[in-house]
Image 1 (cartoon, rainbow, N blue to C red):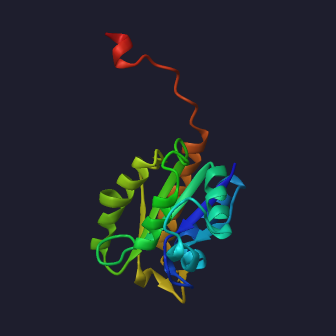
Image 2 (tube, rainbow, N blue to C red; image 1 turned 45 degrees about the vertical axis):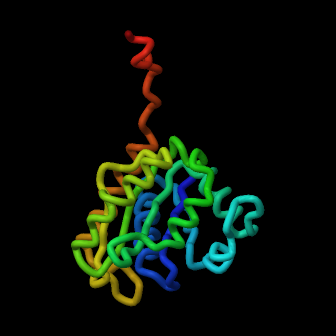
Length: 187
């Protein structure tokens, strides 16, 4: 089982990265499988200079390779001005839209107030659905106040991380659906 995190924050250290790492840690605790985190902050300089896919910098190509090899991706974004960061979106815009199709995802976000949690359902789930990812039904949102020194310290959020980790485990164990006829074949 190959698990990878993707932190869309441009800051280092970041609460978003800490939340992604906490979820991966909980998945590891429940399954014995963990994985690294791709941090947009680490590749932001290369990303900003990359305007097309004709020649990708090695760091970006390596990140895409990790995502392509993943069974489960824990995707985390900070909320800036009611949306995810543009660099995060640019990173996904450069990726072949079919590259992640059929993979499973856990969606998490961080922000200053509970109102920012809306991004998970109204923007991030729509984006991951477009990319063909199967996302867990539950998402995880943490406020800035749930962290101390970039470490998750709110026990309620840690419990929610355990819940989404359990859903990740279910996504990874789910058997493939039997082949069904298309609507045209059924007619």
